Amino acid sequence: MPLPELLPILPFPRPVRGTAAIPGSKSLTNRALLLAALGSRPVTLTGALFSEDTEIMARALRALGFAVEENPGAGTIRIEGLGGRIPAETADLQVGLAGTAARFLTALCAAAPRGLFRLDGVPQMRKRPMRGLIEALRRLGADIRCTGAEGFFPLEIRSRGLAGGRVAIDASESSQLLSALLLVAPLAREEVEINLAAGVREAFVAMTVQLMRRFGVEVVQGPGGFRVPRRPYALGGGAEYAIEPDATAASYFLALPLAVGGSLTLPHFTAASLQGDLAFAGVLRAAGLTVEFGAAGLTASFSGGPRTGLARDFRGFSDTFLTLAALAPLLEGPTAISGIAHTRKQETDRVAGMARELRRLGQQVVETSDTLEIHPRPLRAGTTVETYGDHRFAMSFAILGCHDLARDGRPWLTVRDPACCAKTFPSFFTVLDSLRRGAAAP
Image 1 (cartoon, helix red, strand yellow):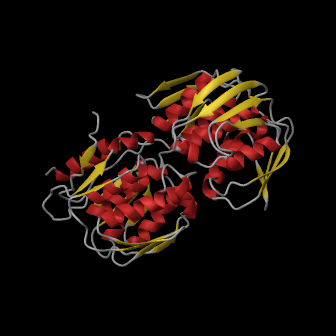
Image 2 (tube, one colour):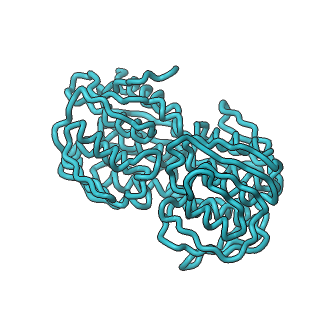
Image 3 (cartoon, one colour):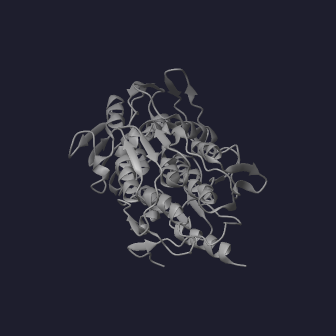
């Protein structure tokens, strides 16, 4: 059912209970799609995410000549690997606002032995950082022309493969720049040695390296960078790869008991997850939530007691900072969030946008280039929060709206453009409504 432009959030009349199924990880789905396409045999991804971002990736791979069969009902995607060969020699690829797809597809097209490829996205995508990747690929022999502003989309790539050798990359603005280079490095004509010209957020890079290992390429990491052998991809252990549930999407439902009380279990999460964003569970523990791994998955519980403001550096798991920021008005004492300057260049300026919306809700907010400090004040009922087309704003503030502010069960917070959640979690509001109805049942 289509979502309205303005969606009043119904508070939970009672504490939450039960389970919430979280869709597959966007980061793992898109990485596995690329690795499977470059492998030597068919691979079926199970538990895959079906969203705007992953559909953009799958559609682009089909445009490049790969056979990609999607079965949303079964949660599977089957990809015919072609042993590193990229069939198409010309394609126009549209990536929308999907930063992961934009970076990965740029690297993939540059690594093709021949061809002419054009890549573009929506206006906001033309503002997202690409320079570090473009410059590194050029040093490896790629012919990439920025047809707009230098260092940004749109791009025209006249492919002639990658030479290999030593290259430095500045991936300080997005770890996806480094991950993209790592993923295609095994296609180069010689071994690739990647040196880091600046610091990088490590969690998603570690995910990339571990996933490459599962697909048969062992990346050697040293103190200053990485060494990637020239080696074909091949999934070890069979023709299926199971995608973990999305840890960033889980952050909203992990935080829900903090807003409404009760207990909620998220199935299929384990402490051995590849996803660094599960570090957010530790933030919630410090705020007063009980979060535990068990046989059934990851369970978050809150039965009362203080909800405590805290100070945390989110540099390593910054996609989750909005979840904490949106709930900061419910915490006792100030909440200080740091390590988030790079999020100003994501789907929107997330730091400025979050400060603006919290002030709209009556909060005192101190904003710097890299930090937010939120001092709780009485929440202002009747507020409509803007989402700026950013899925994480919609989901974070929806969790806040589940708090029964006046204890009368009536909506007090409205989310504009809730449909933007389709980018990574199309069923978010369906899952949330199901949990609310379950809490209301006798």
